[in-house]
Image 1: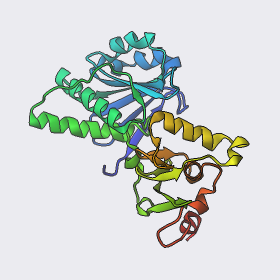
Image 2: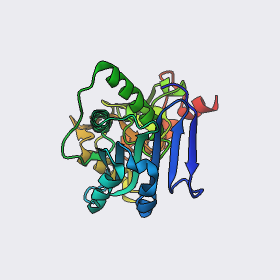
Image 3: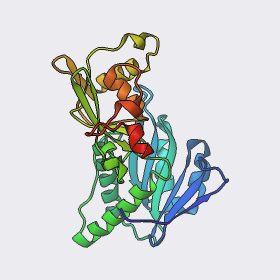
Image 4: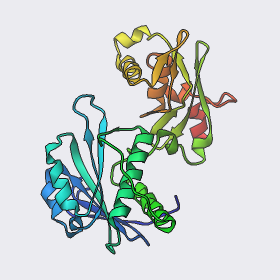
Length: 281
C-alpha cells in the first residue's frame, strides 16, 4: 500500500462512537459505530446506498473474535436484519460517494473480504457460505483498488481482523530475525506493530515451569494455543503450526520457555545481540 491521507470525522468527539473516514482521491467512504448507537449509525444518508458491511464482536461460545461480512443495495435495511445476531458490538460499512457500486461490484467485494478474513484466520467468520461475482477485467481491477482502500481504513477504524499476522511484520526493524533458544529448542520471530510474531515451525519446551503454578498466564496461553491447534506436541517438544501474534516479546518468550521470561533479553539476533541491545542502539 502507498502513503495515504485519511480524513476522520468524530460525530460526538469520541473515537469509539459514531465516526466516518475517507481517503484522499478515493470515491469511497466508511461509516462506523458501536451497536449501542445502532440507530444513529443507520440514520445517516450513506446507509441508504449500496455497499459492503462488517459486523465485529466476540463469539459467545469460544470467546474468540468473530466477524460477519455482507453486501446490500441498501445497507440500512440489510443490517437491521442482523439484530438477532448477539455476537457483534460494532458495525462498519463502506459505500461509494458517487453511488457507482453495482450489485455485481458489492458481491465481488463481499467475496474478497470473506476470503481475506478466512485467510488471515484472526477471527471466526460467521458467514454460512462464500460469496463473490464475476466481473469484466476492468471492473475487477477497479474493485481491487477499492478493496485495498477498505483494507487500509479498517485498522484505523479499530478492525485488524483481515490482516494476516505475518503481514504485520513491516519496516526495517521487522526485517531483523530474532531467535529464542531454550534446552535445544529454537523459536524464530520478529517485532511487529502489535507486539511480536512467532513464526510457523518454531519450537517450545514441552513442559511448563514450576513457576507457572504461581504465575499461570504462560501455561494458560500455551493451553489455549494447543486447543486452537497452533501449538502441537511433537517428539518431546511443542511446535508452532502457524504464525502466532503475541502482545509483547515477553509473552512470546514465556510461551516458548513454558513460564515467565524477559523477552527483551530472551530474543536475540544471529550474532547474539539481545532485543534490548538492538532497540537501544
